[in-house]
Image (tube, rainbow, N blue to C red; front, side, top):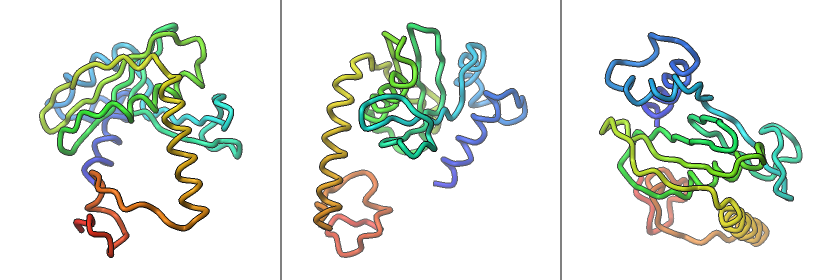
Length: 175
């Protein structure tokens, strides 16, 4: 996890203008974004009603931080830096697109991809423009989480984060 934090900090500094923040191996991934004026680590919030709000706002029902965002309304591009194993699952990108659309309702087309840093390559580009579908999925997850919290009973579900889970009595825990 510390490698991921360091990588994100380096990309943020480089996109912000610090020419010394990245090594030569990652500059080819970052240079096009820097040239397009990408915003690094964009923090976004969304209200329960689906309106954009400040990340730190008390009315924020959901929050997220996009690694790199290029805004060219009515079009946007999201790039998410990944330091771990390659797992192409655009749900995280779709959630960031939802947050971005709530913040910038003028956006009509949103594309996104993962940047796999160990392999020094971009993954496939996803069309994330259907933010209504992402909103429905997020609402379902949030409502489920609220129910689990109220009942103090969370399902034990295997996923990529099982190695870091604090629930040691779960049969899926790999830590």
